[in-house]
Image (cartoon, rainbow, N blue to C red; front, side, top):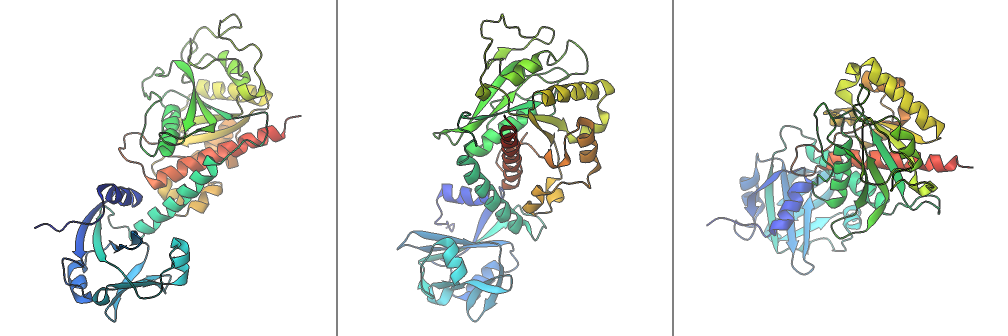
Length: 403
């Protein structure tokens, strides 16, 4: 008869997702195998990395011990963090103990030697050879959750603007729509692809779209919106019409306007917003470039970007540079998410793009969008949320400069 975990299906999937879309294989269950340290050690030895879960029926508590070094010590399984004992399990007595710091973090008030009803140990499959994997994933999850709280409670700094509008501009296939989908996915808690994504030589996006961001399936709409447009092209009469850009920046263009590469919108259009208020206009422009194609941009495309930048600056609109399709963000940050606050001046591609568009290096960000994945990843989530937060902060600076 197969040994089955007491975790529900949704609890197991949530834990696997938290660990970076891994899979769990049950090695030891105290109610089935012998309740002593030797039986646990026999079942779990040479099976690292593992996750230990204990159950307490009185409070329906389940505690997973992560990011620790485990050792067998005097009939106990002891977990150490930074050389300090933080948690221990005594299978022979069906009891557990944790230090004051961990109890405070978990908001648990059990005394030392509290009893548990079940103990399970799982092998974590899919981590590979990275011994710091769990530490990175748990660190990313912590930063992601902190950013989510900050963005869910965000409010513009001025009362006369209810939402921040961010316009994404870039060549066809640079990742504008993918970034919008990525942001929406993180807040939905699942992958969603509302904005149509393409990589053809002509733009898939043919409408000007203003996308609201909803917090969860039944949650509220957050006070920021991402605006998508037709991709830029080096040829005239192809891609976003340059004469449309001033109207977009001023807030004259309505949502779902059908863009025409050779014919800009005019004040005679029935849905033209003739007298836009400050809340209707673009508060931050995000230039989007494929980090792998920066050196392949033609002189005509570079000139078009520089022309747009002059237009943006003439309206005193804030701007950032977003470099997408980076596949080594983990290497760039090296598992230390505080590095996201530091300009990555050692990256020549980033420096080249920053100089080309005259966007300060501190407003230049690297991100890896969701493209073909099926599940969310806490590292990507953290990168995406960090970039979004910085865009909002840049927009706040725009309001500070208003007369």
